[in-house]
Image (cartoon, rainbow, N blue to C red):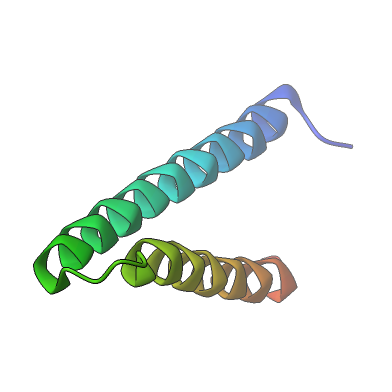
Length: 71
């Protein structure tokens, strides 16, 4: 049986995860935008690829974290 404290801890963990993803994706999009400005290419390659790469890496880390046995 879980206590109220355990459910609050889990809720805060997922709120933190969502915030981390938002900051990560915004940083990747901003970095991609700046790189695209420097290259001058017509198609925004870095704006597309950097957030997708960041999302893929963060999902891989999440899967690793969820598959780890609980202590």
